[in-house]
Image (cartoon, rainbow, N blue to C red; front, side, top):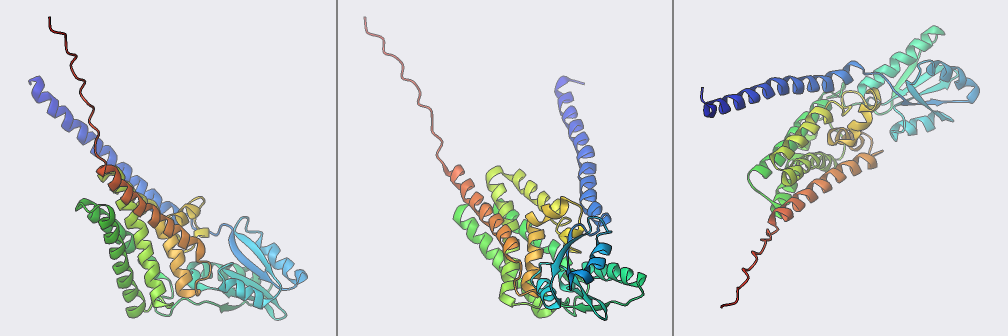
Amino acid sequence: MSPASATPARAHARRLIVVLVLIPAIAALALWAFAWPAARTAPRDLPLGVAGPAAATAPVEKQLTQHKGAFEIHHYADEAAARGAVEDRTVYGAVVVTPHGPKLLTASAAGPVVAQLLQQAVSEQAAATGTQVQTDDVVAAPANDPRGAALNASVLPLALAGIAAGSVITLIGLRGVRAVIALLGSAALVGAAAAGITDSWLGVLTGDWWAEAGVLGLATLAVSGAVAGLGALVGPAGIGIASGLVMLFGNPFSGAPSAPQMLPEPVGTIGQWLPPGAGTTLLRSVSFFDGAAATGPALTLTWWAVLGLGAVLLGNALKGRPKTAHPTPERELTPAT
């Protein structure tokens, strides 16, 4: 074999090795990112209220703290204060001590899995003392989606829509202001379409239609802006980096099936810094809690969108800069003899 023909053969062999190593590595990373949080779902500093006189709530609090690190206890004077805390999304539920026994306040709209977990934990403790627990679902999940399955299922399509919009706009060559206009327009249309399906048709969202459409559009723009922004700065590799970040970490770390506090740390915190997690939390607040606790996730999505659109404009400006040619030195004239 000649040296010329051996060189392409070695290049093909190296590419084959890269593929054989890279694909299993990506598969293992994806499996870890999706399976590990799901397998380790449990309460970790889950905000839970306890309401009533201090002497009466002390035994309840003692029983709850036996689950080390499971609950973050908030104290309230009475049921009305605890109910307000649930409605404001300060706590996921509250145990109210009454003369007739403990009463559990839950909010299945904040996460049906969390509501079920609280019912199980409090009922087991009450059974040990021979009492029954009365449960009041303060903010119930919609009747058309009692388990939150539809809300959970909406996370992936929105992420895919954002990735597709950012990728297509970059690959077809839109740049600068035109790209920004296309990103804003596509996100607005996705938000309107998603609200039409989830609210108007399926009835799984029950809040203000325009607010829901705005949240769904902003969540899409946060992803599409990041994809297009990195694509404008780095090229096709930037599209892959942003898309991989959203798909491999944003979706499984979002806490949509349960709650961020049900995921192992720091997964729950990281998930709320990424668009899918922030979008899910904001959508719950807007749709079921009249916008309570919406400021944090709204700011997170806004920063993603602003930084992404800014990167699109910056990338266009950098590519549009004229390249300065180095002047060729003039030849020195030799004096004529």
